[in-house]
Image (cartoon, rainbow, N blue to C red):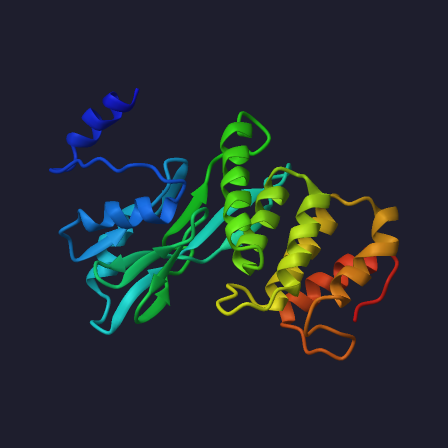
Length: 255
């Protein structure tokens, strides 16, 4: 199987190299990027679709020299009705020398320089995996890698947040809430997401699955326990609206 994949790749690229797997996706991606000799690089996972991919060359050709990367919308996970419950905006097209991968699982591309957003009506990445069908193996693999990473860096907010996302994708909501909460309480340097973003993840989790009777006693406490968020906090507008809808549906008023 692997050898067949190498042969197919050889039809499109001039160089194939071997990488010794070390439970670190960022290390593997940095190695792969080092093999490129292009001015720009774009990336997608094997189970991603790029809507509007034919527009990329035209868009890149019009980018000013001071732009180091282009961000694009990424619908990562959806619920049973097809609604996106995890929508990201990562850098997807980067100048060759401007990006380095960080993170053993769900790696983040750290970009040196300015980035701009590609309009979603032009180009958008969509994760096509159905998390409810035939996905146990890879999801459990990711969870194992994340827990291994957490053993090495027990207070890393990025690892905690990614564990929350992974448990949410597998609909294991109690675990998702546990790790989102732990991430929100962590204050190490380099935290990848603001409290408002973590609050939105809590809200998505509670609203999509936790029974209404459970929300009555828990949702408001979860949200108000986040650092920097209180009755008088100035929440980001989108986060505030989402939180208030969740809390109203459970019989509470918003913060």
